Length: 489
Ligand SMILES: Cc1cc2nc3c(=O)[nH]c(=O)nc-3n(C[C@H](O)[C@H](O)[C@H](O)COP(=O)(O)OP(=O)(O)OC[C@H]3O[C@@H](n4cnc5c(N)ncnc54)[C@H](O)[C@@H]3O)c2cc1C
Image (tube, rainbow, N blue to C red; front, side, top):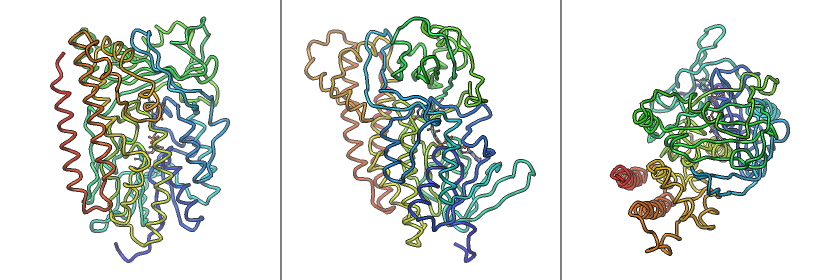
């Protein structure tokens, strides 16, 4: 690094959900002794906005993640940023005959209002903020990231700021990560098949009778259905007794072949409109015009459904949240992992600054801490997701009805991979060849999951061991990917 004194200790690029937590966490752990700057392209009143169309999200988060943040860095969320409490999630099979309830308190957030609370919390701890800056690139000195470069959106002025450490929280489309100008183990690009195209409405509606498989004010509802949401799933999340966040996500490849085989040319909005229309409980849906939902009623965006980036640090640089592909592969829930990672990353960043070592090696502990806390399970869940995407509606109906034990449901509730131990007990009772194949595939994913979890428990303690570890990871993944490519039912 050059001898010049940097402008800041830490620059957080992107003041979204993850960025605001990591800045607050670093301020907390350093007892406000560091100079921390958050830079975002939004104005303060629009903080956290993902696209022109708003703060696009399903808005659901488990209470346990919010509690995790509170217990470690003392940040708590309440009203109005928490809009509605829920008791859990119920996933319905395509035929609606099986509903699997994953109990566990959670919240439906108001993503438009939450950033204002985050802004207040960060400022209280002395975090500085710069608004209206579109970041374009990272500054570097040799093989070390030394800051950010962007454009002030109103004046078109070029802005350069330097820091000992830059933390990239600019979301899934991060141009900083994609064009990372230093040599590191960070993966810069994501496979198209690991991205879901998603969209959602926020609606007020008239309640038309009761059918809790379509709307339940106390539960988040998930519909697994390859016809409604090819390669993904659809959701009805309650924001009140007569208010809803309703949307779906698809895998583009599966959606393309759906269009091809049906001779249609639908887009994601068509699918969501159809999904709203078939819901018997939601009558006369209307986009809310209240201030709390202003400019945030409809939108589409992308979400990653793979394991987190295999390495999340480079010299002077860290990735947190969607920029590190953290959403859970099974349900694209990214708020929980972002909260956990951002809380941890703030601490790791402070420790590295206090140790005067912002190198890849000095920041490495963030990789291992996150994997120990959460990341150990995501590669197995990625394989499970690939398997689910290969199933027909009939197979999902059969599998959900017959192969999930109470123990498996508990595991999924905890974000873990199910073991499908009932399959061994059912054995000869499984009659059709199709369901025998399905049973085999489920057992395969569960065994592969065990290998992957063990492998992640062996994540190298420093960069030296990474190449060998990564080689073995790729071998496991290659094997699993080709297993599912070969499935032809
Ligand atoms: C339709 C949909 C539904 C979802 N539903 C759920 C759900 O119900 N529960 C759940 O847990 N997760 C859900 N997710 C995922 C969740 O929304 C994300 O995981 C979460 O928002 C990640 O936060 P983040 O801060 O990492 O990224 P983001 O929220 O994307 O924030 C990135 C920030 O960086 C800023 N930024 C980006 N580029 C630049 C740039 N070049 N210059 C300056 N600033 C920049 C943006 O303005 C923004 O403020 C959903 C996602 C989608 C798309």
